Image (cartoon, rainbow over all chains, first blue to last red):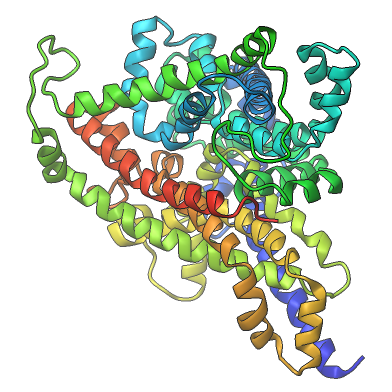
Length: 274
Length: 317
């Protein structure tokens, strides 16, 4: 191996190592701070690592706020919204790709219009609408508006446009009903797309902050992200506890990310480049 | 995704709507099929109409009418809400959004492309280094925002510790307009740049190795290979990545909500934070809705580019 190539490889490793360090640093800092006494956190002369790691901080943070309830709310919202997005997207995508019916074009454009209206722009009318429905501070208020995913429908349609039509034809000739053709022939083909989308949609729902903020304003209906924000406003100067609370919120997602990183990468690519 | 599906898909032109192209079999057009098709599309269409189009209509209508939440007699006021919005901090918020989004696009796309090129190198073990860049993308923004707030804290925050160690003056970063915006931008870019790393890795993978090798044999160095092979062949990916990045930048909210609440003096109040603040804190829905319309139009501009791209050339791979 020539020296120039060695030098170039070394530079690649150094640059990537630096980038990974930039990614990791805040999370490492959070962990170190979560295990310190508050006096250690606010003393600029103290070393970056705790003198004696205080794991009890995590228990203290947990006991100071209804984290269990917040986790439950987030799980209910995350699972229900994700399942809804996948099912409605799968059904609509299939029909738009492989079935013929009157007004298909109009209905598709209506579904597609969901891609054009970012939720951010309509937060005020959305809260009025949910208020009029009496859905503020309810699970249905959190879930139902998030069930339809224009992006999901669009991606499933793209996928089904690429599946061989002969499969369905063969099944129909054998006398299978339309529903059976979908359930037995086409839906199983979409498994890889479902897997890639499931994880990324779930993470988006799990971490959604703005939507719950508009719909929920009671502590017992709050999702985890809101709960953290409330926790911080209550324990303004207990920096070690705030970091312990962040740790409680980050670790489970981190474990999921590590185990499912392939699916996450696939899902991100699918959502943006297709 | 199976490779079979991928190849078939590449051969399919992209079309909107239901006209059959040549070679497309007719599905059963009987009543049973129709009922099934309507049942299949109904949830998506109905929910999109109720929870996207209805609120959008409300937004447009309310932006042209006077009266706050407690005003029962809405009256047409033309563009008054818009002029009030622009005069009362909305103009500043649009400016902040422009600066923030521009910085966000440059930082995250630059870092994404640079790191993807490194990850694309043939050095052993490098491919596995993609994973860490996923992490900031998937951890809750509120949690990381609390960490960054801690790092930017005056005196004991890690940034000030570094400044002190370098013998530089200490600063209350989040209380000074310029530094606060820079701090929010740094955090926003940290949270998101991994997505552009992943997308650019995928984009560079689509460049055929033999083309690159041929260029190398012809004596093209790394820069010329990038300039004349990789960059032109990934132009479409770059546009799509720009779309997603811009939409994300335009709709930055949580970072600002946690770190600065739009302060000091509106220096970090982006368009979306302004909508939230006016609508849910100050209860001035007129101004909030006027800014909502502005945000909608800005996003629409970007989305149109995306749809035009997707429509022009079926698929990215």
